[in-house]
Image (cartoon, rainbow, N blue to C red; front, side, top):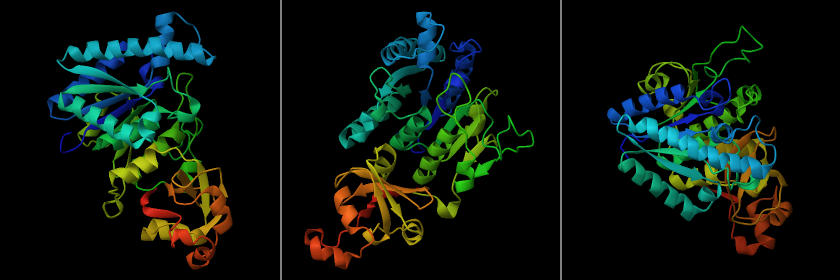
Length: 371
């Protein structure tokens, strides 16, 4: 992959479709024109595109989104083919090739599959191909779903070592309040830290065609802040908006930590934090939060005040503050049953009845991504 890192752009269904709910070919043409322009400037571009269900409804002549899973998955199968055809045809007009990449969470949960997927992206980009990425809705199940393409785009960004992640949305960016109900709301041009107040103000999906909303975009932003990858949310239908963002113009809301607090986490930590499916939750006290966030410490059993879920040693778990805020995600070295016995205790006490642990932390800092 290029030295600067690829640009990953995600388009939501609400931005991709027209008023009738069908893929808007004029918009896709404009988007692909911008992608081609950036590639001609020397950038590598990955497109994460929603819209398979909408395209399938058009191709199959359905008036409403199917409610039963088999019909919905069949609709997505037909729609994904149609959507890829549109991208491939439009990109070919500017001399660029498109390649379809369908993913499920299973493809990134397994470490070997994750690395193989990364190699596939790398080779596609080396060949000058624009990967068109979507979740493989035809086989995906709830337990291994990305839940929304905002997070899929974030995982892809970490996977390819992106230099920038852009979410083309139906809103201009993050506001101080919901602009549809608060006309006085102001656009926030830059966010360096996701505070509890910002997260609490997020809303859900605002369109009949979309599955995400500002809440899902902020989850993606939290992941990108942890990965040290700048992310911008902007209104996707503005003329040349993608090119403007890449060229550094002030558009939408940019999420990027200040220079002194920018993260530079390794690939394994990013895989644990972004691709791993948490099997349980550890709630920790204020002192533990400070140690993890400010000192980069491992999580010790003494800082844990509660545990939820059934997990084994080696599973991924969420680490949350007492107010529920996600602090980190990592690989636990103890099972849920063991944590029930030892949480709140110091290592020298634990060694008396679990001598085989030899003072091991509950989650080692080398196996944990702090958000």
